[in-house]
Length: 208
Length: 223
Image (spheres, chains in turn purple, green):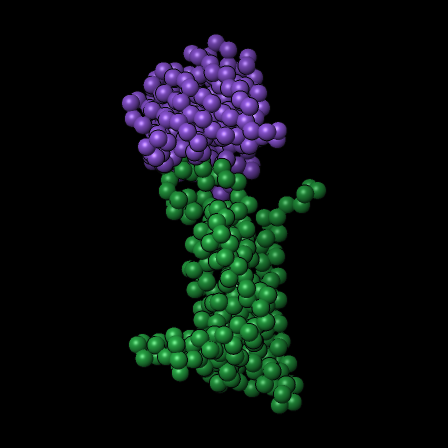
């Protein structure tokens, strides 16, 4: 169970805007997060990962505090160890597909399994600049899964995939999430995109 | 014609470059993270040799490390180290004088990398040090090479600072740029020309080499 109660001031063109989220995420569930641009969906994921600090609030994961601003507590991203799929993929230009996964894990069998799920076996020795947008996005997903995370945060993870590839990948990922018992939060700008796949949803609206 | 000024210059440039690489990498990394007033002051101090006349820097180093008083006297008495009119003095002056050429390109290259690269590495459980070595550093290779070559080439061409702190002692502090000046003063233009030609050739080849290496990494915005 992930319990979140945070407040974060957002940079906005017109006046001040606040991201206020109070929500419980059931362990092992998949939740869709949606809302208008600039409402703070990406910021929320980064706060959970420990990459951004909120002004106020607390995050508890399975009974352990990850963040408690009242007590001045904030675990580092390295200790939270969430899987994170970045909207811009954030792939390492110097590493091949294989090296991306080896950087994250030593488990060679797991790497082979991930390569197979992402249909990237034949591109194992390619660097990101030689991959298509869809292949890069799949690599970003695989890299996040390589650490076998208990919490997986995905920021627009399927935006560059064609419908057929998306359907195949989503089916395989769902099995994988069950195997990992991962709690998954997926940000999507397209409310219909994940219909029938998620256990719950959360709307984010920036408050003035 | 003596070749010792050329060897001395190459030795000075090589030692300075290695030392600055060791000092410059962590310093540039530290400077690239955040903008506190303290960091701005440190960066301004590092940048001063770019705008100060070399003789001014050399003068202050000469005063600071003079064996008659202050730090210079203490270094001589405690450790038997003398920076004035010695090769180690040239190294010290060169490290200070060439520092902005090493720090500048590395710092701006690190700042231009997307923040998400380091963030992605942190979420994989990697420390800041691991992230720097395995992710950030390999992705600023062209700038790193530029910094190394600029530092080396700039040290080759130093004159004012080395003259002020090192003087003109053959085989000790008489580097090529001073030898050129010395030869011209003695109306020996042929020797001055040889020293100058050697310095010109070395730096030109190095700069061309960097441009060729970086061309492979550069992309035109119109392509």
